[in-house]
Image (cartoon, rainbow, N blue to C red; front, side, top):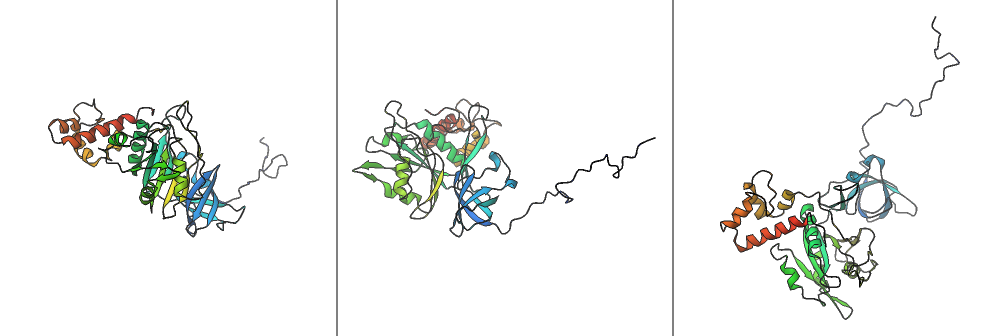
Length: 342
């Protein structure tokens, strides 16, 4: 005879439901009352924000945004925040929404367990200002090439900013990028004054610009001159290695006096580009992209690619000297995508 083990039996324990009797739902709140804000910096899980009303606020990412690189909130992002947005001391707002990005500067890991994993560094910037010294330390063209690839992939306009022109002639270095028609700014440091700074200010005014470069090239010095009171740390170049010391530890958006934003980034020694495809890079070259439509399927467009339409374009004279130079420059960038920066 079966024993009665109903709920009246003292031997039966009823576990309470800690979540209550509310049915589960995948519907998320719309947060229609969220305040718009710009992400200025990220520090150990806390986000420095500037609301559309001009109030500086500290925020954290809401759990519903998820975790991992795909849900990362980065400098330059436009976000929606709720909670305490007064900016008062010891208050914390909550980032509940990330607006669609107009551009995304990415880099990818090239070794270790995370090889090939890409992450966004900066969002919604107009141009990438590649800062490189003409001497002390010596310029590294392959690193510049990789930054150019990253800019084209991000849909950002690249700009070369050459420093220390008082130590070396910029013409030989600029000749490497003449066919790419990359705008160039040249500065020098003479009598405790940065010459060429007005041209840099004019180029950055009213735009959101990311400044990137090797440590020791004078990037932080340039930022401090552009944004009085920025207080970005500056360093010196090691006389043995010829490399600079990392002086900026995280990206930060700084308001320019003439309008616009300068986003200073940590000094870089590598820039992973495994996420960039040959066709993605080719799309930045309108003239070459049009010719490449006649390439065989799966063409890599590299110098050794069989039956590449770009080679035929050069061989039959349609490209001319200018087109041939641009193709050579494109293939140099394509090779730089897989080469380590020197």
